[in-house]
Image 1 (cartoon, rainbow, N blue to C red):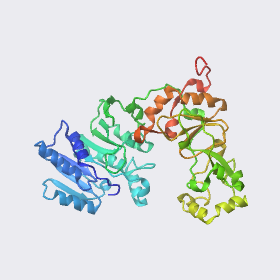
Image 2: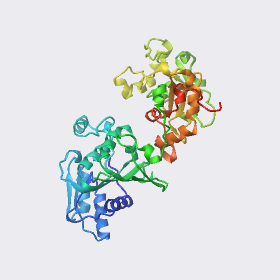
Image 3: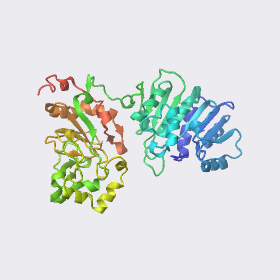
Image 4: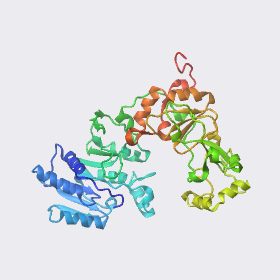
Length: 452
């Protein structure tokens, strides 16, 4: 199976213990390991049963890769009650199971064939948008879980908040999420990941979900329903009671420009050829922004083959621009980008909305210790892809909005809703920023800051 990452025995044993906690199996119980790989979870189940002197359940492992299945067969040869099937688990008809345990494969949509995408989209509610195979494993496994049955998965933690997992969170509304345990970033040797071990019981329950954080903290929460992100519930983010959100008062909330070839278009300000000056704009990148420090002076400029309305300039607009873009090494690099299959070879990866970019705006870093916001008062900077920018609908709103975004209330909300990155950092995204509730004052009321 594509996307296979072996699960260490210590993690397997922890998950098996969760699977059978308070409800040990019997000889009549049925247990499934979908995408079983080399059979690590099946071996873990057998270890647990022998150590605890419990009957072994009927075990079924499903694996599509014949080499991995051969490996599993060699390790499990002679184990009574274990059946291994070479199948595509997502398309296989199976009987229900009392226990399901897995580390499902992580395979992004780009790595699936067109035929696979078509089949999966026809069959699964979770096969929408930028799907990942592990989401489909969730859905299919939950379909096979008996009433009162228990499932334990280790998956990327992002299923708790990314928009592509909204359909899965809706499916999970019909189950009791017993626990979400955030596993260490180095759970899988040689890889930096952000996994979560999730325990689900097939019952309708009003009970709270137990959350265990990586630093050992624990809390019980009631998760949002309807597919909304669980970040606020999990992290205890405050509700600012704003009647409107940042999306309502902003002309644009977006990630910066993606050229697909920064080495071609980006220059140090001091080394830009004079004949390209009329096509360049100063830029700002996330690494240049330092919290609590002033908005930095421009260090780099972006050669931009677009006019101020965002229209791609004809290649013959300027002899100097055409000469530069036609340099063999430059043109070769630009033509190698996937985006040029559907647009002119010298266009940016994403068409820049120049009318909104080239105006006063608020910017922030995409990955940061704590979200912090700066004002580009002149409006001449083009934010690069590592920067997010906010253009308020009313220019006079620029400074009060920036003050609110840097307020303790907004910071606390963002800490509770933003995706976690490595080393305790936060990943700021436009989808989250747009949902930030704003005070009534920013929608037209006076006295935004008392005592001002």
